[in-house]
Image (cartoon, rainbow, N blue to C red):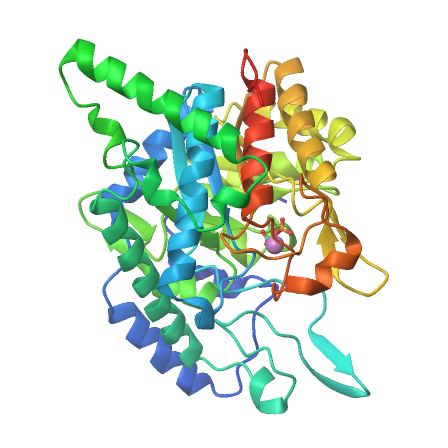
Length: 455
Ligand code: PEP
Ligand code: CO
């Protein structure tokens, strides 16, 4: 099954010779060509030195010296490219990162599922409502959510709009971060209006105070500012699903003599498109970015080894992250064989737990939801399994929002199935709301820290 690394025959469009799952069917190929030409000429969203810097940090996390936090919406929408929403998402990610830093005593690498998370894999190509069958909604990068022929027709110009919205989002995030918003000395910048009503408010405040005290202590004895914590890097990621969009933003960087996907720092291959012979793996093998692959039920040891051999043939540090998502019930049985299989390849791996996608269920009224207890228990199991096998869980991957939605069941406030209808806004997967996300971080980090977190 596997293909020897062959950089000579790879080019940003070499994936066209393979079977590409989950791609839209555009009616007008000439319009697609024009969009790809336009996108290819526009400036990149990120630059190669940032990508290389992230790869270095991931290499440290692979050695157990750092921890990765990756989080954001299941799908971003163009309509929600708004300052308040973006700032709230950044705030909850920064708050969680501080909680993890405190509990795990490791630098935390912050990566948003943002500024480009606009394309979604679907289980069926079409959707039928009342006898009418139309193409499935594949994310704002491809078509529109409304159920009309026009809405569902894939529109190549949406790729340009996606690029623009990603640029606007990234510009705002970078300005906030550069202006000191992410400074650990000023966690009050990240307060959201409803933090005060969170059942975990006092624990969160204690953690923040204790980090402040440590910073003050260190700065007073060393007489120096703790520089690294002032301008904290923030990276972006998205599922590299829509290959034309990714291809158009792939550039050869002369200085490194390598190709980079400069639409994001850290693209990942989703579960449904991780076929070693498929177009996605072909595209990803040729770019120099750090990559992630989602792995879950059905992934065999042989398949995983095949992927690792193709995606990281030189065992480059920082290159490969595996995001496992088995569900709380299955992780204990399914993860160990994959850890063994990956170990046998010799490739450094960053293992990350996604406790969301294996724990999705549908309520009697047809809403997709996830239970807080299952999410927490999968993360706890992930730490345990890796530890028992002499491996290292080096990160978590959450679907969350800084908004006060009711999409997941449970948490300290005891959200129940009947509450879901109140503020269910996700267009795709159910997200942890602000309180649930903070609680999850506090309980995960508290469970791993030697002293625990007193309530
Ligand atoms: C996702 O991350 O939103 C997703 C679709 O995940 P997976 O590929 O793991 O199912
Ligand atoms: Co999702």
